[in-house]
Amino acid sequence: MPWLWAIFTVIAAGGQVLRNAAQKELTATLGTVGATHVRFLFGLPFGLLFLVLVLVGTGVPFPKLNPAMLSWTVVAALAQIGATALLLAAMRERSFVATTAYAKTEPVQVALFGLIFLGDHVTFGLALAILIATAGVLVMSWPRSNTDEIFTWKPALLGIASGGMFAIAAIGFRGGIRALETPSFVVAATVTLALGLLIQTVVLTTYLAILDRKVLAEIVRAWRPSLFAGFIGAFASQMWYLAFALETAAKVRTLALVEILFAQVLSRNLFKQNLASREALGIGLIVLGVIILLNH
Image (tube, rainbow, N blue to C red; front, side, top):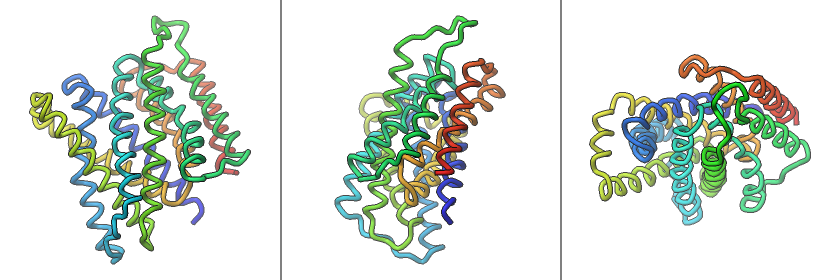
């Protein structure tokens, strides 16, 4: 099924928008690090549940965790922690949609890192799709002239840095999935997800236990909204990893720009932020880039 990776990607993009929105709401009470930790701490039980269900359902034995897989996954897990924290910090500075747009400069960086570290070649059609869609992202992130929302470097740099860290994470997780010796791409993806969540949970829990136990207590008290953020985060990650197992990270993360469209819908309905004309133009460019990608 050559389109299966695209289906996984679109589902993941929708889930990620919901997770980002849930984490944004938690930032006010838990802070950036606390809200970042929620997706990992409360996502881990669901990641382990997914793993059990997949192993039982497929009948495939648990694969051996070789050094290459472990190295890729550790790098990716740590990069994802940094990326999430930077994204949430940027959201505190700028609108939900604009911040998501800044972070979505990621596909250009994914294509470069994928070529360097995984040998994932970038064809002319893929490069064109990436450039057009990314141009749409940049147009969307331009400040509105009819509001007091002016351009500042801080949210822009935070968002772009977040995109870079997400790019490293995407390449790392795809590398980890590919390094596992198993006949099932579903098992490879799910094992990588569970291991990544375990690493992230241990790292951030240790950090908060040493430096900010008050935040840990606040996370426990906010378990209801945190549980939803953890579940939807784990589910979205499962879909991302299934897509990474089937297709290059550059193609997956370029199609993932449809997240901007989902974010716009959520932002208008949930956060009451209006659509500017430049954002509409940006959306059109993103759609054009995605069309080129899917027909490439």
